[in-house]
Length: 456
Image 1 (spheres, helix red, strand yellow):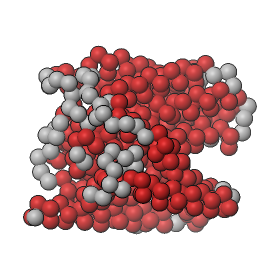
Image 2: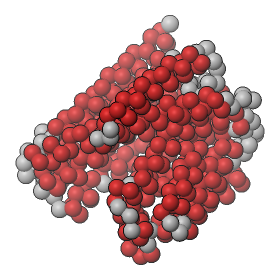
Image 3: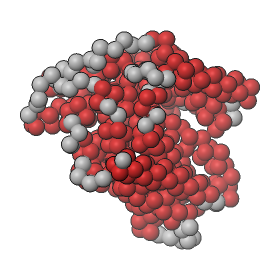
Image 4: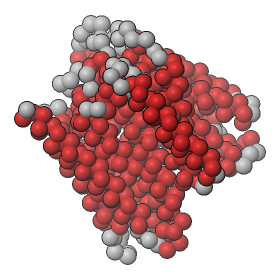
């Protein structure tokens, strides 16, 4: 990624970054807010709940498939152009969602919306690096993490309010507003940055997209009981796809699949840690509502309030950790965060019967604090371990690790939920703690790799 065309004043940089955050809000709401609206959409179009879930499932497949190709496209045409183009496409598709006369039309519009989401998500961290450069990127990433945590927390609540007042189409209206503000402000405040001059390899992009789709199909299929023969074919196709990708990407700078970055120890260990951290988080988010109601005996309203402690803890700490990671070595910080994260899950699993809401809240706060201590320094390390001209690819990998980690965690939750909900078992929380510990081990190995690199 080449630097921005001209240095910006701090004031303009901050304003430009605010519009980037608003654009990111739009695509976060694409998943968080729409999930709440799915039952209303199913009722409006008189379709089954299982068919309505394709509103979310299809979007996930498209986003995962296109994150790396979009990141490569951003390096070819410029990350500003891709970000704004993605927001424009997202906004146009959102208008189509609002006006959709049938479910099939809505599905088509959601597919286009997911393409825009992938474009925005693939370069958001690269934009943070372009705006703030290396000395303040941790702070910028921390603020972005806070923004996402707030959107994640507020999205379902805002969606529920809009559903109550004016129906499901107004939920898409909220996304349209965010995308329009982000696009308009970004056009005015984001300065141009020159593309790297690389050719976008369409054939490689298609191969990477199909391979990643096959991997996601296997993960989701295992959780949902999809036909084993089809899953087997998808697994074989994914393995063959990765073999071909490894062959064509080896020694190739700027490849769609960033093998050059994944060969860097600090980079790949950070990505591994992120996948396991997001898997643990997703497993916890899926299982905890059932556990707190059925096992701990909380009322739904109390459960919702207690669970909000987790993202709020993350939101409050992320900017502080970002600022801190710009000033001290971020490697050990991330490992400490995952150990705290694992301890939070272990404390929840070992929670005595009859523990009150305050005791549960403290354990959930430990999870939120641990995740915040890990996430921002980890993302900073991923971005800065990549050369500046590969910031787009590094940004795409961060988003891909989050998506795959969440899919993996959800699959584990689906496996264990039936048994745990009928027996009152806390086994999923023990598994989540184990996942966080695996991530912590990767983070410790990364810290050792950083130390050895400095020593040499």
